[in-house]
Amino acid sequence: DLPEAPDAVFLAVPAAGAVETVAQLRDLGAGGIVSYTAGFGELGADGQRRERDLVRAAGDMALVGPNCSGLLNFVQRAALWPFDHGGQPVSRGPAFITQSGMLGNTVTMNQRSLSFSYVISAGNQAMLGVEDFLEILVDDPAVSAIGLYIEGLKDVPRFAAAALRCLEAGKPIVAQKVGTSEIGGQLTVTHTGSLSGSDRLYKALFARLGVIGVDSTVAMMECLKIATVAGIPKGTRVAALTCSGGDSTMVADAGEKGGITFPQASPAVAAELADLLPPIATLSNPLDYTTPLWGNEAALRKVFPAFFSDGFDAALMVQDYPTLVGGESYAPYQADARAFAAATQAADLPAAVVSVLPENLDEGVRETLIQSGVAPLQGMEEGVAALAAVARFGALRQNRRAGEGQSAVGLAPMPSLPSTGVTLDEWAGKQRLAQAGVPVPQGRLVTAAEAPQAAADLGFPVVLKLVSRDLPHKSEAGAVKVNLTSVEAVAQAVAQIKASVAAYDPKLAAEHFLVERMVSKPLAELLIGYRLDPLFGSTLLIGAGGVMTELLDDVRLLLWPVDRPSLHEALRSLKVSRLFEGYRGAAAVDLESVVAPIAALVRYIDENRDSIRELDINPLMVCADGVWAADVLMAVSE
Image 1: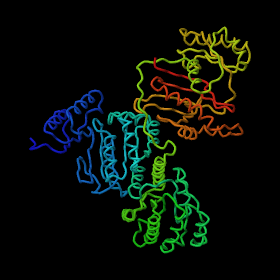
Image 2: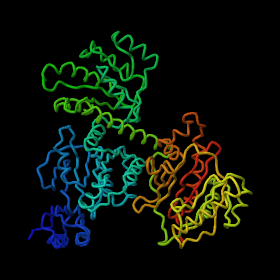
Image 3: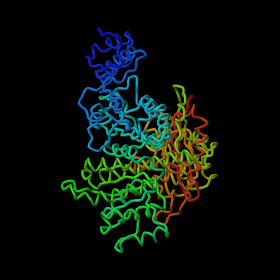
Image 4: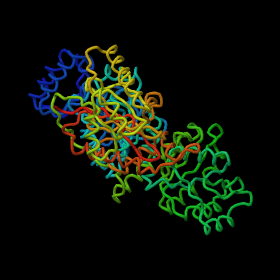
């Protein structure tokens, strides 16, 4: 009944009639549809079929949703949205993409002086997903930064490509990934039909791409505020100012957690500040300029520029306004803020004022600070963490431009593996590793009768293992004996393994054995694992190994491609890496000696990604005299 085709449609009809309605709109030549209508993929198999029908009915029309709240465009004053919302028209601001429609509403009503350019509720992402919106928003001059509330991504490689474009453009993506708990993961499936995915994989992805991962919407808002109001720092060197010794300590503690550095004054600047500061002031960074200078704008207009003259990447000042008093009580705070704004503008420093308590920067104060280009951050922990996160984004961007380290690179293409494969026995797997340059203990593959003599030839002590592709986890079957010191001990161990394996599984053949020289007592044991994830592609896990693997939960995941600097960084991030340094009088090992065999393994995987299905080295023994792959599990394509 419409007189002509609509440019945009907000679809809010019952699910039973939605597909036919969309088909009619397509035939009319409508521009695009926001489907508020729910009852599709989030309801399981039947709903997924209806969702596919909906996409087919849309044809060439753009379809947002279904099961979404829609779009808010504050730049062009267009709302395809079902609720009252906050926000106001802007010419520039952060965009927000969410898989929770109500959260999109919530952020527009924030009391943090953060005005959005666009709010997009993605819903089930049946046609248009997060990746599609990113590809548009990165080129929009009205967008300063992009916030994401995501439960799962549909196309990780496209997301990666779009995120790298955002990094290059200096538009941080700040992502709150939910569904990390057991219950939360179940709820994401029922909410939008999205796969929650591994929390570690998403963290690895975000770290690779320079995406700022946050645990709360509040943290996201503060990050977006810094990027929009103050701009992106080039690094993590921060000059911090307070008028309280306690505030200085809190800033230092919070900043250190996030990776902020507070460089101390050079001798020349220290001498200049000594003449400008009261005698009771202690020269440091963070700098407590003390209450004798509080409200003395003329004096601070000399102190602050002097402090900044050493060169920093950003500046931060702590202020908590007496909001319940107001009036003239604001005067000294405002004087200090004016001096701070003037000094940071002159030094071309991204600047922020942070309050210890979130409520101690009222709307009037926030707007005044924003007008002077200073970001008002609400809450010490959240505010300083946000500054640190955006500063790390800026540093990564600078490193990428300079070509330093791995910086941020896209993901490797997904290898194509045949549908069937085979698990290699330990001997076969170790032969492949040895040829690839990964050290393995000296050993021989023998029959039961040959084992004692082979042990004597190798030299004691030795390890004896049953070799069978049908027994990937030998310890459970009692198929491993260690520290055997004589021919008689080896013969006895053969008999014990045969008996134990027969009791464990009578169908298992106990015919072939691996005899290996025991390596020296390890300083540390690592787990190195390779997997192919259906969403993220090739992944490398590095973590604490041996019997403590599950207990310690000390691991890092890397996405392909993997380079040497990322291996160094991953190993240094592990708690177990302290053992490499000579923990409690033990010998120390050079980190490069640990990286080298892992790098050799990475090269081998690179050359064989179209045939390797799975690979585990557990443990990779780090010893004073070398690094050894003590056990390997490898599955390959037939």
